[in-house]
Length: 630
Image (cartoon, one colour):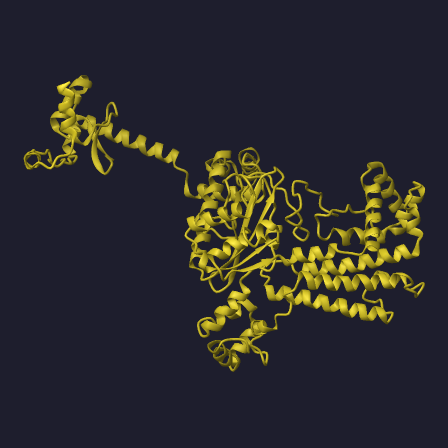
């Protein structure tokens, strides 16, 4: 027992001077480790030298055993020779030198075979890049691309040139690594450019892909090399819930972990879902806690699609009947074949109808227009099938309603397509919506005067009988309601206080600016050279061009132009299963990649794509992918 107590007491800390003196006087082994160097004379013992951890280490040229640096002593080297190679102990120095040269040749040959030539390495990256852009499986490189390339080269350049193709590594694992390397390289370059930008704006969307995985996709617009750049920032899976807090947590973690500053974010554009725009726990509300100056925008494409869905009961009944007819013909293979034969016999312009889809914004206009174009063929086919809606295609009033709906949805589709594309600004899209709203007012006034030329199909129907009849009040009512819906969904169209951003040289603009900005505006408008530049350059490039001379004014203008007006980039990107990287146009000169963007998981698979001009709204169920319309 005393032994344990003594041990316990000895482990307790003490401040006794005697103990401190004893510890101070305790000798320490602080001898430095001696680093030995190899000498050419050691070859007579059968040893050469290799570098290991920056030090010379002896290597036996007979058994290829490598010893430590401490063994670089003649006595230890000689002992190794005598104990392990007694038969060669009496050999001359020339014998060991020949062994050393033979070992050097073997090492050089092995290195040459194991190392991929630079040109073959570059070819491997280029082939992997094309495989990724084509969205093909990784195995296609070794199974198809490599054999086909060898056959082509053999026929054109000969057998010697074809043998060089074997040096290009294109196994499935190699292709996967190449794609991952390119993705990391482009992602690093993108983040470096974003960190150097003074401001940036985001557009984000959460949606479910075809494998029922919730994904958060984020695009970014920033300033680089005196121009606006739009790139995909990241695509991450939401493993649990998709509430505003969960979405913001993923977004905030990425921003903070990659050294981005929320204070530089000037705009966030989303689809307007509750998780995005909630006043308390929505993503935009949580972002404003980090950056109070952020401008939150509801996608104007989405708002326009919501306006187009609103229609009177009478017109909605026509649409439902059209959908019923289309489903009767298209959903049955036999009916579809018979209708195609009928269209060919009657010399119709088209051979089939288009399926209607609620998740496609342009679907209504395309379906209605096709049914109107084939109204005679559809009526004939329904009559032969004794369908209950056959009489609709002989009713002149119903046909006029169909013609009007085809015309008005054609106008709405043209507006929707004009708002799509890259490099769109809030002011630019607002101008288009405001112009369309004024057109509706003009059409309503002209319709009261009996003018129908703004609706070509309806005007054509009225040529035989110039009488709108009972549909005139219905059209008037729909136009008035449509104009009201635009005012409800676009309450911020009257932004004349920002006319100085659109055209700083227009007279009378900029009165709402502060004194410093007004002074810079006066100086700018009195420069003839800048006026010429304004007419020649795009709006964003012009304000970037004058930023050095007029920093206060240009800074305010760039904050107005940088935020996204729509989430077109998100709708134009294919939602795909987790593990599929997204492609982009960011250059990657370091790895010879000319457009591969950051990968969520670094794996490539087949990618399902929607048509760019007709993306579904994010609130739709994206697990159902419809075939493209013809």
